[in-house]
Image (cartoon, rainbow, N blue to C red; front, side, top):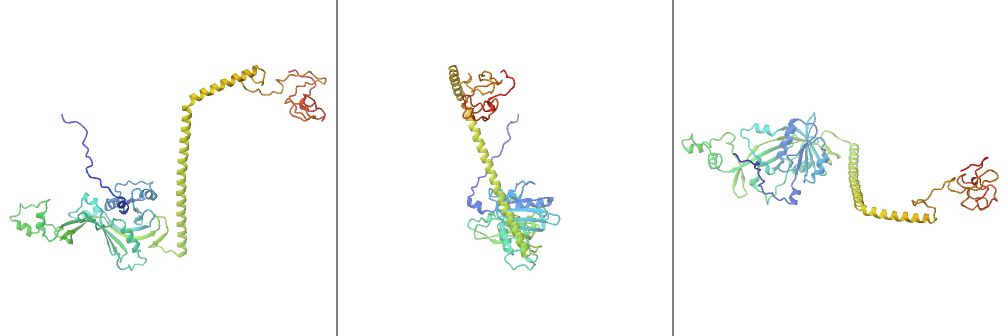
Length: 457
């Protein structure tokens, strides 16, 4: 019976390298994304350009339609990202935007022509390259930017363009440079005649210089040559090692770090790009226009654009401040609700003792009120509540007067005919002015219920 169990999982065997904070800040990193509706070729171009910028690029970055440029700029600081490369497409042309984070500027290039990596490899008989070649950043080569200015009208600002392109890839640190790790190179060549930049991507192959092809093939460890059809080894060596036309090309010799010379061969792996600078603007795609190839602005129009850009920037700052205040208010509200919930919880936890104390106090008060009521003081009921006054009930009626009215005992003594009447007739002032007596002024109509016949209550 075969052995049963879980499938074996390979554990990570590579040693994690500790990267210093200084290296994190100095090494340029980028996001390569697409925006809007693009075709399949632009999607493949985004994938190819991510491989070019590897390993300092988010190769597995997933995009969504709801993502904005502000979202990428917001998370760039956490991941130490310094550049944002955006590919877009319209009915007229395709464009590549190069953005320096976090404050700009933004360079917009028009893709005059491009070729995908698969098309470049398909044209080669033996394409080179492997997954290990993308573990180290490519060596950047800038050509033609220090030459004469272009004769084209409204030529591109080369100084700004070369600084932006130079910052895309990490610079060579001469003291710690390892020649054996140079596996790729990225070439940016400026053409002053057409005012465009040509981009090429190559794989670097290193070999021994000064040795014939046949001998070199005999000395290599892997892929040993087949000598079964040769009568003598001299035939193999003199024939160039049965090399093909692509292999017969001699490698360029270059000085080695150890003092000797090595042979270097470049094999293009793609993609190819022809970039034409169209626009330069401040900020992240929302600032004032510094340069435009096809549009010319008067000084007044330029001032209007700068004012609008300044207004957009101030509105952006205001929106950021309001958003921060809203977040702080929500956090404060949540904190107050938590405190209130905690107080309620603490109150419910000690409720049994408080209920016992409240019951004892209520019993004591009821006994005190009952004793006071039995003693005839206060006029309170057994429940300890004060009686409400009623104008017709609760008072002893006096004897009926001669005029057929009924008088009630007044609780206050009248003074000068202005005593307050009982509530049965309302409050009124005495009309006689001299009706002072113990029953609160006979002059007020509120003290008497005027009726033709007396009522019995």
